[in-house]
Amino acid sequence: MANESMPSENRDAPVAARVQCPFCEIVAGRLPAAVVYEDDDVLAFRDIAPRAPVHVLVIPRRHLVSVMDLRDEEALLLARIFSAIREVARREGVAERGFRVVSNAGRDGGQTVGHLHLHVLGGRFMTWPPG
Ligand code: AMP
Ligand code: ZN
Image 1 (cartoon, protein in one colour):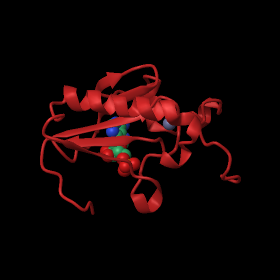
Image 2 (image 1 turned 120 degrees about the horizontal axis):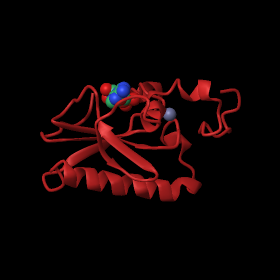
Image 3 (image 1 turned 90 degrees about the vertical axis):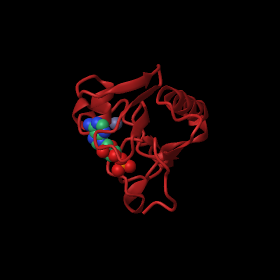
């Protein structure tokens, strides 16, 4: 992006730009997903290549690229994302035993999909540190 201070949400971007994003496609219902939780702002669905018995991705419906896009104005959205994470943990049966929340950001973070997502991983002991 030419101007890094520009918000990278693409709510108003041309459809052609949005269809590049697989998670926007899931939000739009054009790409199938195993949804485990949804509300007006947040969607949670099973990762297509699970790395643990429980592996759910929690995303804002609105396209934000990564945690780098979270400004103070997104405080309520962030609270709702974590509220969704707690509900996903309960529904998936890992709330008591524990689980891990991860959000990869950028190249060195290993981010492969450029739509903010929080991995909820559980159902087995999670080693530390991650690779
Ligand atoms: P990251 O590498 O942190 O950006 O995570 C992206 C995650 O999205 C990976 O764990 C992928 O397996 C997962 N993923 C990619 N495409 C899909 C999809 N269409 N449905 C569900 N999960 C997906
Ligand atoms: Zn998107």
